Amino acid sequence: MNVIIDPKSVKHPCFNKESSGSCGRVHLPVAPKCNIQCNYCNRKYDCVNESRPGVTSAVLKPFQALEYTKQVLDKEPRITVIGIAGPGDPMANPAETLETMRLIHEAYPHMLFCLSSNGLAMPEYVDDLASLGVTHATVTLNTVDPAIGAKVYSWVRDGNVVYRGQAAAELILSRQLESIAALKARGLAVKVNTIMIPGVNTIENGAPLKAVAEKAHELGVDLMNLMPMHPTAGTPFGELAEPTKDEVTAVRAAIGHLVPQMTHCRRCRADAVGLLCSDRSGELGGVLAACGKLPPQGQDDRPYIAVATREGMLINQHLGEAKRFQIWGKAAASEGGGFRIVEERQAPTAGCGPSRWEDLARLLADCRAVLVGAVGDTPRKILAERGVIAASCSGFIEDALRVAYGESGVDGLEVLRAKQGGLSKPCCGTGEGC
Image (cartoon, rainbow, N blue to C red; front, side):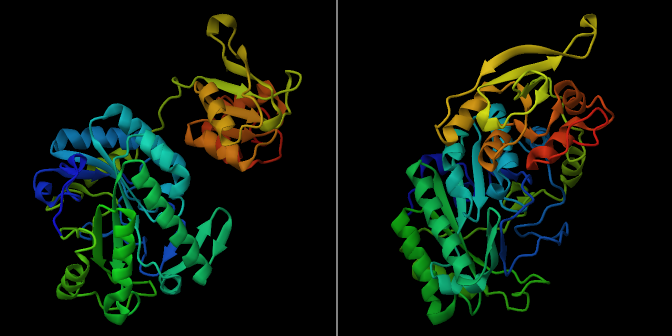
């Protein structure tokens, strides 16, 4: 079929083969966790000479990813695309992924931003992705038949629930199709990755693969990347033979009239960098490793801590019950040190669903954390994605602040992150309960 290149894809080397020799990409490995287990995937292996998804030499935090990007762009100015492709699934790591995107988009608004996902958790975040400047997305779609999907996926975890067999396949398929439709509705260019698995989705002369292409055509997908499965040791499909080049070419020819086919994929690593035809991940591995060791940034841009309290002495209110928050900061040495109340802020109106917590995140944009008696999963998650840690604790406010600001001999931010799950022990000056 005749391929018309979307103007925004001209400088994307995956979506436009003609630019692959002049435009490069850098993948930022900030997403280590995955919410599914595919029977062809094993992320334990990492060899500098190995190129396949799920492999990286280091995992970066968002602020480290920004510094790495700066250094990479200095060394490789031909890069036009910044992406996140793992080593797990970006949307199984929403806080890290969205914060990285925010930092990158603010620093490099002119760059194309790309995201690759299995689609399971993506529907919840499509509005965030669009608002953060993501221009291109890839969704894995190995089959549209749940009976086949049950053979592809060992398990699928949605929240705290693990699904197996056909139930797992039905769930992830529904989310993948929902993701693709939602991304297209928001104007993103979308590619589907389909792994060609011998004897699994290649049966009946490749009919399952044709069905995927038909669904992709129906959804308006821009590009399809049919990839031969890479047999990986330690996986259920590790003993299967990799499809040959001729076999892959034949299937592409049979379905190419339905959706344009990508024919120049390099099965990129999660830390790939450079041109597709000249990857520099090995050469720049030292830069990646060095950035992965950078110490945490200061919190000067978020100097305050919010507190939910009934009487102004104890942390004793549930986040959802608080009608106002005390905003605390560190007192200057001239004021005798310690802590001081900066102001009180009125909480957003109750009963507005998730938007209430988004409003709260904006209200507390200069706060690194909010200390509460208890907090639900939804507000905790929304706040965390926007850089505010919601930590459950109890006890005297000033004792908790000493711990949170790291003045009790412990790492305050790590304590707060640990308490996002809602530990019940009181905060104290020693940090034993935090």
